Image (cartoon, rainbow, N blue to C red; front, side, top):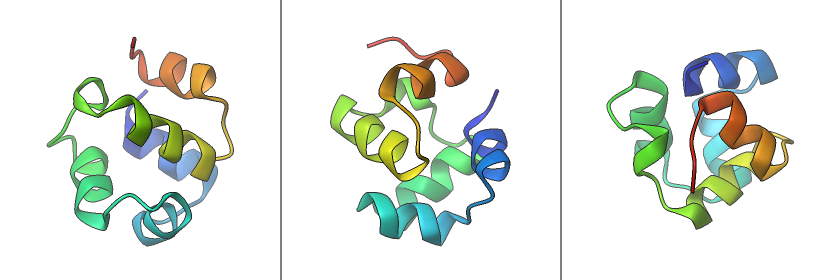
Length: 68
């Protein structure tokens, strides 16, 4: 599953995720477009994004096939 798939599944826009997580919109856009791999984001960023998407960190990582 891609970040974009996860974003769409949760029914959220890039702006909504950015505001809810405090992660810059450019970062969320890069993840959604596949320019940045979820494997390349910091753990703290992953925690913020998971929380914004109403997911536990483990579920967020499992769906995106990311390990920390």
